[in-house]
Image 1 (cartoon, rainbow, N blue to C red):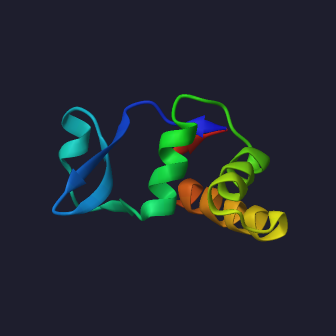
Image 2 (cartoon, one colour):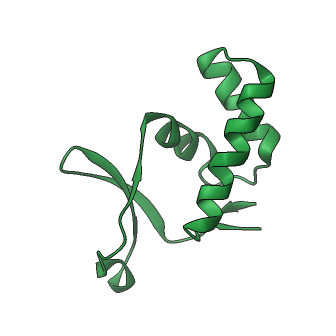
Length: 89
């Protein structure tokens, strides 16, 4: 899977938000805000193909957490990306 083309992260009012570039991004009825961990993952995986294991590895390497916890969190993060229609598989 990978992030869909056209989405960028911008800092707005102290929040990191995902926006779509161009005129389609002018509809602000749905704001997708990223916390620090989500921003880290976004930046690490941008422009790359990734799987659950790749996300979990970033979490383990950065936060030195247990691999099982990292995998659970990675699956939850990817599911949220799906719900927000930010990835293509």
